[in-house]
Length: 478
Image (tube, rainbow, N blue to C red):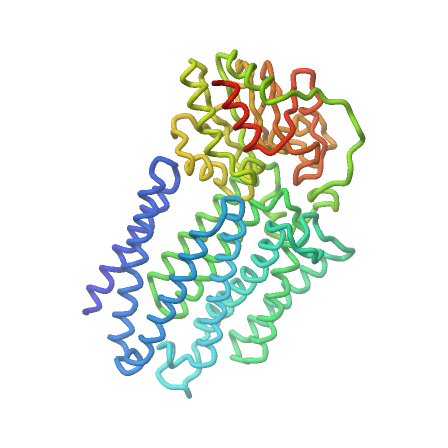
């Protein structure tokens, strides 16, 4: 295979990746985007193997076996995990995948530093690695290490089933934390420059250890409420790590793919920070400016009276409404109630009720979590609206049905300047004529705050598992 053909194939793969990002920007084209992504990756893998064979046929003859074994093993594990993962565990799977990308970048960087001749960086083992390549390896390895350890912490926080304090949803903060982060960051930078200009392997090893440590330090002070932003941010880090290694290996495909992932992840993180009224740089720097009460489950709230009702009561209100807006949240995913909700939607629509779904940018535990959940239940895309497109309609809605959502409909964001979520854009459910809220209990959301919406005169609480409650509503509607 000629170099011109290899370049052309890499260009084709890059175009596929760009089309994949374009397709994934909207639910109606997401499947097409995934197809483009798979085609692009397939072209990239085959072309890279061909390039290895062209550069060094001897190494390729034995190394290609390991490559194929790795592809089969990794592909099989990935397929099994993807088939078995529950919708509620999807954010954890994404965090796990990010950690693997970071670890892969670290492993490649270490291999390139120890045996640069094997990767074509230098001609022989005696030749020194050029300073430019050492700089690229330092950056790729450091970002990869931060991505790995940070993603491990994010995985634990998203899981919520580990008792180790670092994996708890509440921020982990201590005196001098940000000063420590600054010192570790400066040490990594200094050691990276030492390695870049001297090639000192001990400096590279120490900076790698410090990068693993700071990955933990910048994620532990971020509360569970900000986890969607963290997942997106780590996605960006994984892309930049891949791009840095791509420069070291002189692989244009890795550079392009990594840059696309890195830039798109950064843009998404910025958009989500705006949606949560969070500072983008504060999140990047490890929750700088946050306080210990900014996230995580809260203790017991003071007992207050709420108006509660049954599934039959809720069904009566829904069937007698002209317009209904449904706000899905993480509780809907936990109960796996999306299919029952689709059945309820069909029955209400059949009775002449106009039904729409309102999606908050950070609903769930990762970007697009609720969109994926509704798509799995085959909810029509034209019924699903983003926050900025539907917020103006809440004031005219007869009934708003909130299912397992909490912080994203909390009026305190607009009414209480002292609230930790003050200024955070919310879905204006409180403006509707009637509000029905389904929750298992009065427990607070991830931000650890009481929700004034639950205590309004217009609000009726329906307690219980979302799937059971919705199924009872379906029966009542019939």
